Amino acid sequence: MTTIDAKNVLDETTVAVTGNEAVAEAMRQIDPDVVCAYPITPQTEVVQLFAQMVADGKVSSEFITVESEHSAMSAVIGAAAGGVRTMTATSSQGFALMWELLYIAASYRLPIVMTTVNRALSGPINIHCDHSDTMGGRDSGWIQIYGENHQEAYDNCIQAVRIAEHADIRLPAMHMYDGYVISGAIGPLKMLSDEAVKSFIGPYRPINPLLDTRHPVTVGPFDGLHGFYFEHKVAQNRAMDRALKVIQDVADEYAAISGRQYGLLDPYLIDDAEIAIVVVGSTAGTTRLVVDKLRAKGVKAGMVRVRAFRPFPAAAYAQALQHAKVVGVLDRADSFGAQGGPVFLEVRSALYDCDPRPQVLPFIYGLGGRDIFPDNIEQAFAVLQKAARSKKRAPVERRYLNLRED
Amino acid sequence: MSAPKKTAAKKPAAPRKTRARKPRPKWDISDIESWGPERHEPGATIPEAGNSVYNETGGWRTFVPELSPEKCDGCMLCYFYCPDASIIVEDGKAVAVDLEHCKGCGICAHECPAGAIVMRLEEKE
Image (tube, rainbow over the protein chains, first blue to last red):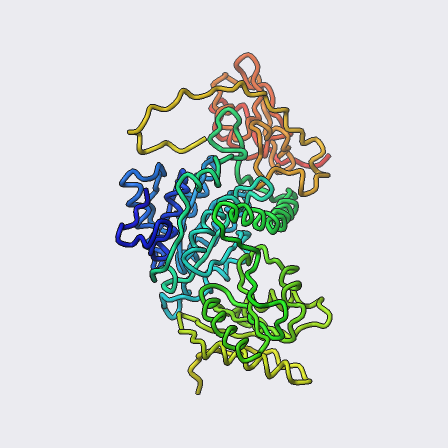
């Protein structure tokens, strides 16, 4: 049933695919009612493959072609309000062009699922991986789940459908993976059967669908003039809070059918770690390698990989990192003028109430696809080790990994 | 509900199950001013039609239409043009204006070929 070339089938259950192919396959199995997307590097392959599946009759989705991402998001909002399951995908500038609609989708509580392949934002123009596109959208009201590799790109895409559509949540969800590093590179993927995915996601249940002509409703009414905008925003945020439990519940259910267990975050040798790194995306693989190397030398190093970023599971971070002396947060996006990158700000705030309070230091790396080598991560751990030995608290200033300096 | 399926081919669709739907209870918003976040519909959706009558827009008015029913020839232009459905018609003639909803836009007076409606500045008594 899979559309993957037979020569790429490694064994009965494992195939060799690009990250984008993995997601296109997930979308085929989800078979959403309406997909509307506009191609942009490095997401293009997702849209191209899916459009081919539509043309070949492998899915029953309505594929709407549009002239921009602004229109793509508008169209899925319309379709979702109409009462059907919708998906889209984008990257970088496309994500930026969707901006005002991201907030609309979230505030109308439409469970749209979007794949966002992380890419740097212009300018200067750059097409390679960093996280500044989706990190910029962190306050838009979308659930955000970051994946590390091909398998997670596929698994998160399927789980996102259940999370977004959960009756307690009804919020749009985006899942991310690194542009090129995952999207274009080939890696192993264990796929579920079409039937398993179909029964996992279940039928779509619309709430107040616009096309139910027997029960006419108004979607998106004017909410000003002493209306209830404030109450609606608080309701939206409470749904986001409830999503923490739902993300874990859906992950547990998914583990039962896939054998792969996910959590709100992904800890690695963290329980007795004195120094730890928090990282997002594919760099986690490199970081694990360095942690193993340091452990072999007797250094108590550990790692936490970010999975759910919105909602941010602050309590889980406090729990995981409370025994660490120094925590380094590796951000692949910067928040200009802030005290550090977006993940740093969250982690540092999450650890504020720990007693004793770990030091948290900001690192910036990989902007515009700058390579990150094991040596660079070792340098970061060396900074943490030095800070852990020192009696004085280290200054909280950005440290840059693999930056050319004057 | 589902989108129109493009790929028809396969098997003929099973006959659609029809289920007698219970009429929804009327959306009671009499105390909406006291509602907290949990009582509103998700996404600010208004879950029924025809409730704009509860939204009294008469307070927006600066000019008020003054209707002389004896001049009305029953052409109904005011009735059709009124954006707030505020022209009250009896026996084919405009007899009054619903001032709880009339915003005083003046379209009725502009359109009336019989000169039966004039706008005057509305002043507090």
